[in-house]
Each structure stands twice: as structure tokens, then as C-alpha cells.
Amino acid sequence: MAHTVILIDGEKKKKKKGKNKNRTQSVDQTTTEDVPMTKVRKHKTRGNNKFNKTLDSRTQDPTITEGEGQDKRQKTIPKIKVRRSVEVATKKIVHDPKLIGALPSLPLFYQQIVCPVRDRHQYNEITKTVGWDFTELLVKPTVLVLGSSEAGKTSLINYLLRDKKGYESHYDTVKDYKSSFTHITYDDNPSLLRGADAVASKSWAFNEITKYNKQKNDCQIQLFQIKNDLLQEITFIDSPPVTDAMLTNLNHETSGYYPILYNLIRKVDLIFFVGTPSIVDTSMNKVISLLNPYNYKTVFCLNKSDQYQNLTNLSNDRKNFSNYITSSISNGEAKVICTYFKGLLPSDEMKDFIHNDMETLLLKIKKLPSQYKTPRLISLNIHMMEIMYIALLHSEMRKKDKRVQSKVLSSEEIGEVSKSLNDLPAYESFLKNFPTLPEDVLNACDRVKVKPAKFDDIDALKSFLKNDFPYIQKIASEEPENVVKFLLPLSDPNKDPEPPKKEKKKVIKEIKIAIPNDDDGEEDDDDDSNTKKGNNDPEKKEKKQKFVNINKTLIENIMKDDKQ
Image 1 (tube, rainbow, N blue to C red):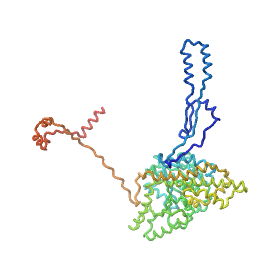
Image 2: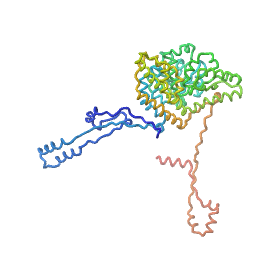
Image 3: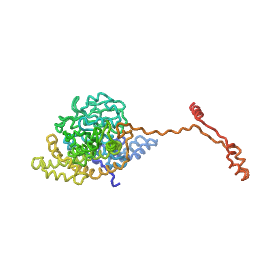
């Protein structure tokens, strides 16, 4: 119970201000908005029994006159104090993720601990993101597929969906918007929601990212719903092709490809970056660098491996591809695999090598229904670390502004602020992956008011990150493993998987019931020798035994009679 996470309602008891109001309110009419967060104590009205007894005695005793009754009432009533009050007392909430699940426990923590600091210091404005909401914390796992132009991003999704015609064939209109991010989810009836329709879809997890949509036919994030069983367990986001013009102005975009991609990278649970050997001659490293803090959930696919004639050439290009990725990834080792989604491999040696990598890809998808919790919690941890770092920077900037009328912090002052994170898990990698965050906070001062920090809120967030959140992560890692129920494709995309054989149901065609013989009782009275001889003679026993056969037709007739 030492690890049990406890939330305390921040609202304290209202004292003398509310006493007069409480006295006039009826106990039965009093309600509380949050029953788990408060405890309502009802006090019985004192003196009611005595008051009722006095009134009853006057009505029941005919010897009491009206004048005497009034005198008694005047003597009795003033002594009675009628009080009706409701006391609302704060209550500690034991909110143990071991009891309700790791992810289901997050929304309440996020609302009570993270949101106050996030909103006060305008995290969304500074980072140019939409943060997280409760829907995103609990949504089913999502896979983002991005990469260079004509690399095979859509082919990878169709391969996993086992959709040979392609997901676009379900709704032709989606082909007109290839410049957009397409979130593919499940629905019985195909539909495409974009623009105002997408914004109106409040249940959609990525609804808030639509604020970065461009107008009309330009880059947006759109919701595409089709009927495919895998989508009931995992959703996919197909990304638009990247042009050289987009890469040139990538970091300066305020809407469209860059801000949408930047938000999605932070929120999805698995990323497949698909590329070809020609990527080494492009500026795609600008996109790859965005993946650096989130390398733990990214797999880099060297696609179109079927175009190689031998393993030597493939190995050389894989090495060059890996070096190109590593030059932009400093946070851990990049996971690189070779893939292909159509075509034939020329040799058994090539098949063994590439199919082994394809199995790695399929295993990621197969185990995602349970393993997605770990990357989601790591992403949320990064988000909360950013919030606390921004709050601490704001506090230091405000102090300096009062002293010297300047909010600009020196490297030494930033270093002192960074030391406040030293006792938090993974603080070193966080500071390494977000070195420009202090600069971003300073640049946002012209549009964001620097507010003084509420250190009670910051201490609560820090305590949560240090003690409670690691416990939630531990519980998530210990929860039962789930695998995809959908029949995934084979490592060879040219072959179709065989559905599992269904067990045949055993059908009883006939029931044979043995009827006891009447002679059995007489035989029991015989002497032991005769009994033993009779019982040990199988032919005699079989002749004497009578059976009743009940077949399928008889059973059906009995069932019909019962219904009638």
C-alpha cells in the first residue's frame, strides 16, 4: 500500500461564510458535483422528536383548551432549536492504478495535477502544440507512417490491412486529398471527414490538431473511416508525400504539414519511417531530426528491397541508410529493417534475410495492443517534464525582470533552473533532447504573459513525476499481454495466410439407454456360486439386457412437442 497513489481535493472546508446559507438549505436538496472527491455528512434535525411530541400531546388530549395550548406552545417552542445543515468535508481519494488499470487512472491525475500548471504557463502557445486531452490518454493504439516521396508508405498500410485493392478503393474521394494526413479508423460505412466536419467530430482523438489545417484542398488532417477488422484494434495515419519546397520552409510553417506532423509525433504510439536508398541525397534529415526525442517508438524501414539482385548490394545500401538516419538521431540507436510489399526476391539467402526483418515489423503490430502503453506513458512523461521546465523558467525570468528589467536568462541561470529536474527520472535525456526549450520560452514572451509560478502546484507535479508516475509505468508493464486478433499477413507479401482451422463440433447422432431387467432381483437371491457364474457370462448378460435407442429424429420430435 506504500505505492498507493492518493489525490487530495484542493478545495478546503468553507468556514463561517457559508454557515447561514447552509442553515436555510434542506438536507435532501443538497448535492455535490463530485461525489468521490467529497464526503457529505447529514446531521439529523435536533429537537424534532420533542417538538412533534409537544404538538401531538395538544391534539390528543381533549382536556387542553385552546388558550392553554397557546400558553404551552409559547413556553415550549422557544426552547427548541431547529438546525438543518450540511457539512461538506474534503476526502482523500485512493486512486490506485493497480485496481483500475494504468491508463484509466491517468485522466484524473492529469486534470488535478498537470492541467493547473499547463494552463497557467500557456504550454500550448509556447510549444505550438495542443497538449493532451483525456480522449487521447485512453484511445486505442495509433501507428503513424511517414517518409520520403514514393517510398511505399501507403503500400505498408495496405499490406498490414491485407487490402489488395488499397484502403483508398473504399471511398474514391480520398484520392483527391493526397496532400493531407489521413487517420484511418473503423466504421461499417465508409466516410471522409475533413475541414468543418472533422472539427465537429468531438469524439475523434486528434480533433484539436485540426487548428493547424490549411484551407480547401491544402494539407490537413482528415478522418477516414472504413470497414476493416484490424482497425478495430489499431488505427493508422498515412502521411502526405514530402516535396523539396516543403522541406525548405519546414520549420517556418504555422499551419499544414510541419505543425500537424510535429503534434502527431508526440502523440502516436508507433512510427514507421519508410525510405529508399535515394533518401541520402535529400533534406529528409529535417524530418528525421523531429523523431530524435521519440526514437524509442520509431522503426526505420529501408523499403523496396526486392529491387536488389544480391545480398551484398542490399547490405551496403542498408549501411548507408542507417548512417544517414544515425546522423540525425542522437537519442539511442536507430532501429533499421529491410522491407518490401510487392515483387519477388531473387534468392533464398535474400528471402531469409529480408523475411526475418519483415517478421520484426509484424511482431511490432501483433503485440501493440498491450505494448503501446509503454511508449504512450513515456511520451506523456516528456510532456509533463516540458510543462514543469517551462513553469520554472517563467519563475526565474520573472525574478530577473524585477531585478534588472530583463527576462533574458544567461546559460548559468538556465543551468540552475535545470538542476531542479535532477531528482526526476530520465531528466538527462530530456535536457539533451530539448536544448532549445529555454529559447522557445523567451521568444514566446511577446505573445505569452509570464506569470509567477504557484510552487504548491509545481511541487505536486514534481512529486507526481518522481514517485507516482514511475509506479503507474510499472503497473502498465505488469498488465496482461494482449495480441492482435486480426489475421496478419505473412512475411512474404505474395502469399496469403491460412485462416486457423475451426474445431468441428461433435454431434451426438444416437443415444443408447440400458433398461434394468426384472430378473436381476431374483438372481440376487441365488447362492453365491450361481450368481458368480451368471454375472461372468457375457453372452447371457447381453441377451437379458434391454436397450432403448434415441436417435436424432426422435429428439427433434420431442423438441417440437415441447414447443407446441
